[in-house]
Amino acid sequence: MQLTRRARQDGAALLLMLFVVTMVLSSILLSGLSKSDLETQRQKKTLATLAQAKHALIAWSVLQGDNGSGTYPRPGSLPCPDRNNLGTLNSGNASASCSTSGGTSIGRLPWKSLGIEDLRDAEGELLWYAVSDNFRKATAGSFPAINSDTKGTLLLYAADGSTLLTGSGEELAAIVIAPGRPLTGQDRSGAPDAVTSYLDSGNGRNNASAGGPFIAGPARNAQGDTVVNDVIIGISARELMAAVEKRALREAENALSAFATANGGKYPNPASASGANCAAAIPSVSSPTVCASDSTTCIGRLPEDSVYPPAAPWFRQNGWGRVMAYAVNANYAINGSGMGCSTALNVDGQTKRYVLVAPGTPQGAQTRPSTTLSNYLEDAANADAWSPDPSFAAPGTANANSNDQLRSYP
Image (cartoon, rainbow, N blue to C red; front, side):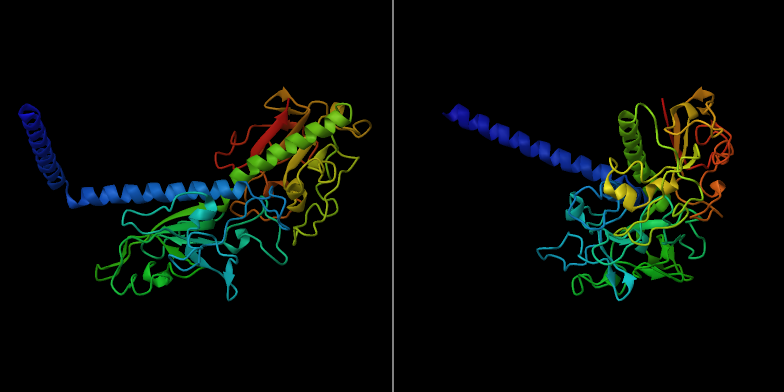
């Protein structure tokens, strides 16, 4: 018994010694880290958290439109910010309305609605979030379609307040903000739900303003004082719609396959590039117009009547067909004879039955809707696809800045 007790005492002493040694070594290691090293580690943690939030928002957005319960199915829409009081039952959920007093609201990231953990920055603060009016979730009333033509509206400036970080075509659909530690005048315990208690303003910009323009921290004033320590990550309309386009293209491919199966291997004729409704925006997804197939052409836009059904309702309601360039090989068009259509339809020299191109969001001086294909496609080999030229190329072949996405069969 005495031996066992002594063994226990020796074991406890050894554990205590190990603990002391560990603490001493940790202290030595931490003391060896400079202030800048520690700040870099905090910055990395915050950036990783922001990236996680961004990915969750994009994934949530892409999956919208399939629940069957909403009147306004719009893949590409984003949740409302969380404007519920901190610590209440609904805290962490998206608010029912995205707007307040006519302007897009700003609030905390709705982590519960996204189905993720309550993400926090390196200071232990919850993330904040704002969404462009063009992408906010529709809950009532008349809302326009969301498709490749939809542009972001939020602007982000560098710390100097004058250098614009979001160039033409890179405007933001949403921003996520890590507020960092409180600055002078911010009372987070006394006003835990006030946006000004967390988000900063300086150098002519104000992150607490729902519509921005926003400023990326850290930013200092003329006296060298830190006036903005908010760390911001943006979601551009370009990158958001690139993800949504993948889903829309898959929906289109499945619909074309179903059409061919039902029609002896033939595909629908395109809609004319300048056909009725084909060069028009859809002001309300609750009452969409239709860009219809034209039996006299093999080039143009994807016909919304021929692919719906089987394509999901959201595809037609948001006008996805009219933003996609579509060409069909004359041998495989359901009305392919006597139109002068080509049987040499190809992508990089490989013969295809059909070619489908999603254009990405507008870049530079591109304006949409349009009857000019160069307002949609960047590559010269594809920007004449509404002409009789049957040759296409993989996007980016001639223009590295191309944001087009091409699908073809076989």
